[in-house]
Image (cartoon, rainbow, N blue to C red; front, side, top):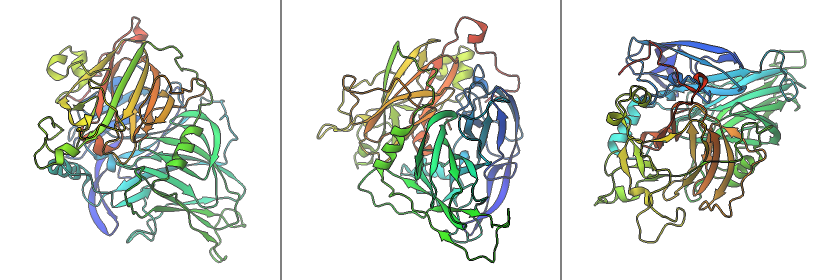
Length: 542
Ligand code: C2O
């Protein structure tokens, strides 16, 4: 992969963006379960770059995970780094993306993992497979935009456009022909590999007149369920079967935002692509035929009920790795802290990423990016100078996360800026409750854990209550990103069987920039198959 500067014209603007091999979205990584993947990434731009293989389990290959300053230093201008990892026990759709500053705004692409040779899908074999990547697009340079937002302390402006496979579609200025078109043959069944690669927005996706049968999420098979609309948070992927069973014509496929807060007026233009039926004459669309056009109907931006129904329907086909007994009970609050910071006389406790600005934290720690990678510091045993291992396993303050306490500053304002990690022993069976503090947030936090998939054993509104929470220990979904409901909680479980330093963070990049992240260090086990190998010789150094 070549990291390049590419001139692009979109939405009536011409500018230079960073791409892989000049493509937006970037090239697809096709592989099979069990394959050993080798990707040499050469950086031909003046920017720092890294590539993260989002959702890849990276067994014993933490050095190839990709988040800047967590598992590697960035690949600097003119440098190269070769990522090497094995795709074990996963099949389906994932994504790769840049993992430094906001470079992933334009540096992203699909990962398609086919089952092992001779192993069929657990659903009818599709006639064709297509990738649908939801994205967003800024007329400004995204990396500069992040800087400006952090410097100003304000909120992130909305993207200039949503995109489907890089195309905004006909409803945007100068975009009549900047439309993704997919031709289908009547009567056939298609597998859509849907990815949300957007920077800062959860999104709905729908196809006029067609239903989608979801069969896989985050590279794990699910019990099939059929819906009109899906919602994906950034970092989430979904495979769905679509039957081309409608009258010949052009059907809009549309993508629009999901924002769970009820009281915000929220307007935006949907991204639209075309699902175009091939004419009767086999394969070619008959331009002379009268064209049936069906516009798509997106849900309301705050259709929480629909999202909840879809979330509840997501069940894994077989929960093979679910730990029924746990020995580590963790509880992390996640939230933004802005209110106190924005007051004219800032609260003295307010120490967000930049004092007196928006910031975010987990268990009252707003993550500070270190100057060399956490993994390197851990491996070289120089941790003390780079991070401390006292990330709290439970919040330090008792708090009513949802209702708050009248006249009391929200708990998240009392955070510290630091680089803290939580250490897990090899083999720990972890339950982690992620509790949104809901004080100012208008959206879910899509929490992503690197190097693992985890079971989402529960979701709920309000405060998590261990006595009343009902957990699904039968067929919970096995995912790498969970949209923790605003003002609610999600409980996840995983076994810490992969040594290394694993980033956990909100996949809305603006929240990541504000410090909504932490790192798990998973210690080596006893045997060689439980021990992280030394770093590759070409690992970029800071
Ligand atoms: Cu898809 Cu840490 O990211």
